[in-house]
Length: 453
Ligand SMILES: Cc1cc2nc3c(=O)[nH]c(=O)nc-3n(C[C@H](O)[C@H](O)[C@H](O)COP(=O)(O)OP(=O)(O)OC[C@H]3O[C@@H](n4cnc5c(N)ncnc54)[C@H](O)[C@@H]3O)c2cc1C
Image (spheres, protein in one colour):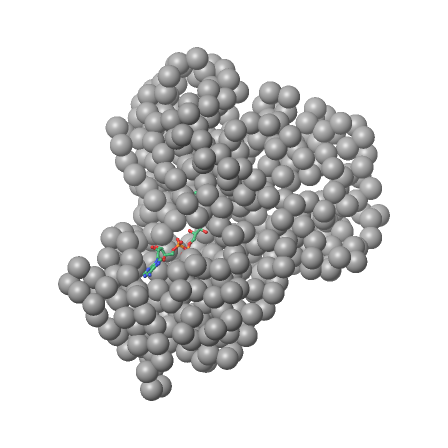
């Protein structure tokens, strides 16, 4: 069986890994000159910069299985224990997010009224809204407004760069939704869910270990690509996909000109818009669903400083900023705390996120003004008076797919598309989760589906 995969991000590469292991012939066509998609590592002046994911969570044993088989075990690094501490900005002050019941009772992050409100959660019934419920509405109903403002909303912008009023709880946070559906509440469900995960050998996002690689996140896709060998073709932009007798004809452009391949199966892991454009001849309704998926713009601003210029202790993952605090950026990862080799001796580095679904209008500002304002607010929060030693940036025009209200209709259609169009498959981060862990977790069942049907 010959399978052509569009896109050499982690979704395409991990799926190819399982297909190859099962004996299928796989060809991955990737538009860019490098593999990795949203994973982008750069080294400069002794700094190691990740403009996409800085790390990922080891939520599935499949990650380790791939890492070991592609020979990357010695390169894998787990985040420093300090990274388990996360800060939230409140009234201009960085407050640690409480991680245990005693810390929760003591914290100044939530008022006494909010703490009492949280304790009522086990007694709150299910909503009648069904699928059409935003994460904001779900959290306010179950846990109260303050918990939304100072815990969940910043978390939502940290993961999705998303808008909690628009993200669907069912599609974007299926595990949270399931806790209410199956167990009637989050607290009851968390306790019972932990037992289930133990049985399935899976880890919750809270307990999964955070990892990266000595030479940054792109080591992962690069090692899978080397393992796959000549099956990965970079600089190959797919320009057409059509049925040809019982096969699928894939046309692509390289610097050698236009070429064609015949495949038995075709999997797209390209972002939604590109998939829509290429599969419009195959299914007329598919582009409507794919083009409705919103990918907000995000800028990643990377800052390096001399450690001696940072007056506060660097003892955590970084901080998130609730929308209520009215700042210009979403938060900052203290990247060199997670993995010390990210900055040269005597230096520290930070990854800041700007924009997202709630602040796309910021990019109407001149770039220099925006950067200056972000750096000024970051310095004020951190108590830094010195100028950065290094400034680097990457603007993602379409960063992360938003699983917004009504997403269930897209998800259902994607399933119908595969049934109605044998040989065609849809993968990538707009299906089944946006995290690297979810992309890997979804890759094995996807490969099995391709092999079976
Ligand atoms: C700024 C940012 C920060 C993030 N932080 C984290 C994090 O901390 N932790 C985490 O777990 N996740 C994070 N994510 C999410 C995660 O990195 C992505 O969801 C995941 O890497 C997506 O992988 P993918 O293979 O599905 O898609 P992509 O990586 O988008 O890959 C799709 C590929 O298709 C290729 N392509 C497009 N058109 C064509 C064409 N015509 N022909 C051939 N190829 C084509 C593209 O070039 C691309 O390489 C982050 C994402 C971003 C953008």
